[in-house]
Amino acid sequence: MNKQLIFARRPEGRAGADTWKLEQHPVPPLEEGQILVQQHYVSLDPAMRGWMNAGKSYIEPMEPGTVMRALTVGRVIDARNHPEFATGDYVAGTGGVQLYTITDGKGYRKVDPDLAPLTAYLGALGMTGMTAYFGLLDVGKAREGDTVLISGAAGAVGSVAGQIAKIKGCRAIGIAGGADKCDYITRELGFDAAIDYKNESVAGRLKELCPKGLDVYFDNVGGEILDTALLFLRRHARVVICGAISQYNNRENVRGPKNYLSLLVNRASMQGMVVFDWEDRYPEAARALGGWMAEGKLKSRETVYEGIQNFPETFDRLFTGDKIGKLVLKVLEA
Image (cartoon, rainbow, N blue to C red; front, top):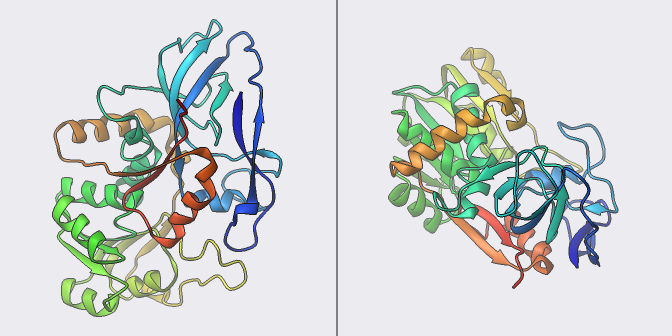
């Protein structure tokens, strides 16, 4: 039997428990060329909130009545003459929030649990790691000697982006909420400095830490912090718009940047990015990220909760900040 979390209704503002319903159905038989994946872990990402909204976006919105879309990692337990995957393979893909998924394998890739824990393939070695890789290096064009500021620095993408910045010889400054997260990014991940936006003035600390300004700002939160960072851009700075978690539940009065004229004054650029645009280069990013992890230069940390029935409250942790690193839900049942 397959337990599936069904997207029941589009939320207004913050998603509540009534956004989803848990259903149970028999697993249908495989057809030729399909594989059956027993899912072990489900990724929880801020982007999932945007997928629930109707309207134009970078990906088709989810429709009520369908399985909640999510990135997943699991094990192939049956294969019907598939040309690429066999029983016993571990795979990552978009399996949705359910215990089992049947797929033709499109969009899936093999992963090796002997090289890294399976959860890492949803974090530093997965789409979040690749988002940091392409966002910082291709969009942000970070290079040795740059001063790089990262918001949401203790989160899944921000924590990897800061480590890549250090690997590339940049000065990395992270913005995070609370002393524990600030200690984590400086002491464990090697950021040069941290700003605790909950207890410090972001503008005041940036004046202290970045007297010559910023070369790259990697934004994951939007809102007031984005506005503040724009005031500290250097000539030809690059602003990477990766996410805006502070605004995802704000449907009425989304706060956009007021200080955008700093882009003009400093001949700076601000560009949005979605990792899907680099699909043909995923293997490049996977090799780089995996190599850095093997060398001990890249660390991965996942906050793991258990039970498909606990998805709603676990998802809410993305917006309360009650987690460090990548947020993952274990759905494998004994």
